[in-house]
Image (tube, rainbow, N blue to C red; front, side):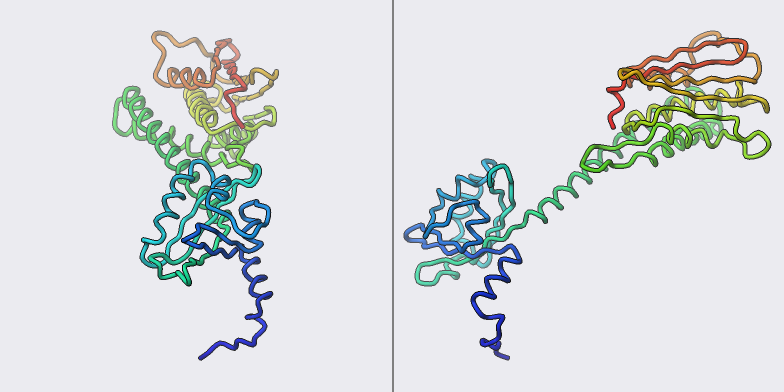
Length: 331
């Protein structure tokens, strides 16, 4: 079936409108005189003032330096390419970078009276989407590697601090679950600002398993500044809170029906101070002997955030003071 050449679609003005709407510009290249001719949209793509013809050197001044040699070699080789070709590259229009795709037919099959024809297509949107997918894939790979490294370290620590396989499995599962709850709260921020969780949300979720649902509900209270923290800080705090809560369940305030736990916080612009206060539990005493593996894990986690940890073993209950450098809490 032959197309209806009298249809409005085939009118030159309407064809130009369709190409412009699609971000397509037309070009021709006289291979003997090395002269390029473009339509109005082509000059817009390249950020050039309109003129009768341009040379490759005119265009090369706007090609991104990282792509220039590749594009120069590709254009030189187009006549040797059999069939259709496609070359994607970046052009600079002022401070704006656009992705342009040059397409045509090679091997002289696209020549007509020594002139080659083709199109420039603005593919900036597609390239930005591809770059976004690559960044996401790289971020996911980075996170998986970090989590595997952490899991490996926790496995070694749990193996040294337990005596049976069943005990090790329970301890390791609890620690990994704490990590999982922390990472569930870490979300990308708009505008490529990174990832963050709210400090109060993080602490509340981590302590939820230790809160009673019956007569003693409400004995854990959290009151900290509203602020975001990054993934690394969320991981360190998850491990720290888990170890402190586990010790409290075994020996401290959370082991008694009348025990309470208050987690408060403040910031002075340089450090964030988190105070863990246990009251109403059994009498507590400072641990004897060498620091346990759980305590070592907490100390390393807080030091990794540029902070310190201190303990006050009063008769009323233990008070733990965490001080963390705010610059280590990217958000």
